[in-house]
Length: 398
Image 1 (tube, one colour):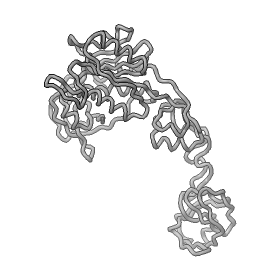
Image 2 (tube, one colour; image 1 turned 135 degrees about the vertical axis):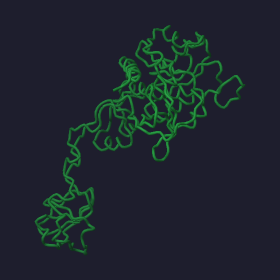
Image 3 (cartoon, one colour; image 1 turned 180 degrees about the horizontal axis):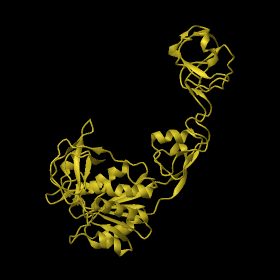
Image 4 (spheres, helix red, strand yellow; image 1 turned 90 degrees about the horizontal axis):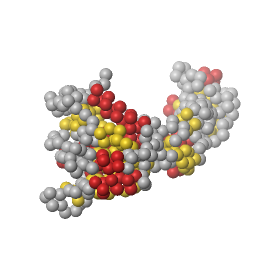
């Protein structure tokens, strides 16, 4: 049974997703669809396999001839050739994937035989070989018209095997999701630039940019920095939305005098769906929609908060807008090697590193501004309110 705080997080995302605009579909040549999201199901244009084929290198025979123990070889059938006809009392040398000869109903594994130039010898008393042995029959994998890949499937390398195998020269996919990033804050200087003691090198922009650029279905349109001034924040959001499908902001969403993002969104007709959730880090997070249904995610300004809320809250909404069938990537559970008894009355996202055996270790962290702990982590675990111990806990990798 879910706790109320977990329900609130999921229900908040559901409300945001309900009116979120999904990107349009387009027709793309199959040679260029890798990494895209299917907009229509992929159907099999023929049976798979399209005819009976051998699952082994060996010899195609009739089971009626098994008792003979020796058969003359009447031919060879490689993969990619038309099926041969097997005469009674003979064997045909066959290779994996080659069509089963007409009249054959069994394949002897090559390693179970003694091969001569024109005959093959085998154990006539073996009970291993039966009707249909080592034959993959027509349609065993799927029938013509079967759904091979559902709408909303990401065309990963394994999915591309299906896309390439079933005859479609072009596929209907969602166009790439166009995303913009706005980092607010007077204290920010670009990464790599000299910074005075009272200034901060911008890590939020590079963090979000790297998250987006690793996703083949996203096009990062721009990333910019904006000073904490009401008019500039409002103009940057309004102008930024004109060329993107989704906008990610960092900073300016809390309760301070320089937090102008909420009023900026409302100034041009945007609708705030949720603001502040019972989580740590990242409680000030904001989810909103433009009049056109474009996503606006206002993430807090501290680096750990940005990374966690982007991964846990923004990414599912980006997937929704991009046309995925599932908003969330299934997350594994992990156990902690170094549990403590600390608890919160909020959902607690705690940074962890993962060892080669898949066990998690809490990363020592000084809070949501601790960039060192963020840089050393592999992801985070999600701990419900008032819970502690080794877990298992839901794990989300960066």
